[in-house]
Length: 301
Image 1 (cartoon, rainbow, N blue to C red):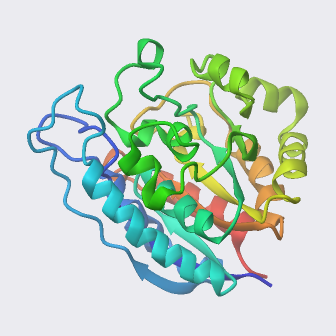
Image 2 (tube, rainbow, N blue to C red):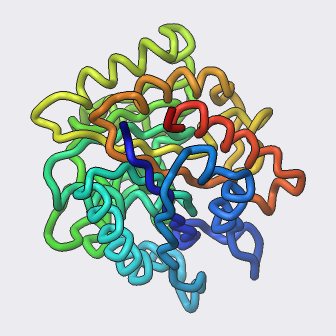
Image 3 (cartoon, rainbow, N blue to C red):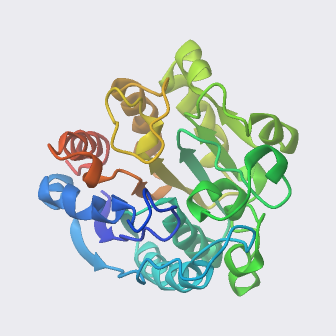
């Protein structure tokens, strides 16, 4: 039986400001889900908070690489220490973000322990890096560079911490739930990074796609795999409270069917939940939806 540990990782350092002078509200995700009774509903142990640095773009300008890079790198190391300790102890960390840059802490921890894969459930390919700016636009926001960074593409202070680049190999990641028109797909295909957009998941069935991903993720040479869950994988008709609410995402039942087999695998060693923004959801419907979803797939019997 899994021993689940709930850890708050409320960093918003990887997102652009939603408006001049404002800060991204996804740092409130953890509090909103805890208000839904998530600790009790998961049967989890308390893992505390890894407090992030202050959000402050300072004098950063476009073209200077990722903003908050020093702060993200320091936070990644501290979060990795927390995750590594719990995984070594046989616990299952549930990280409540924050934005997608918190995944760097998880994969750095696992890279220190061995060779691990990632099931990357996200509405976007997150593959922006210095080599594709003509297609993807300039680098800057680490939260939109997640797949690129964890596979070693991007500035070394984020992608090569402790000389461990890449944290995840191209062959060891499955990107699931991106929009059908996602611009990163041609490059992902050319590099052999497996991905399944919404249309494929619908045609083949979410459970089938999940089991196909598991055939690669839960067997040697991998020591296990991590789950990354970005709330924007859901369609904005059910989850509008994200920074990029693009249409034609997964329905809640489809996401549950995709998550279920992955979460049930004994080789799944942890999960992070990101991008839900309570500032965009005054009634708290998104928090209730996410808490229900997490309980349905991660709660201990």
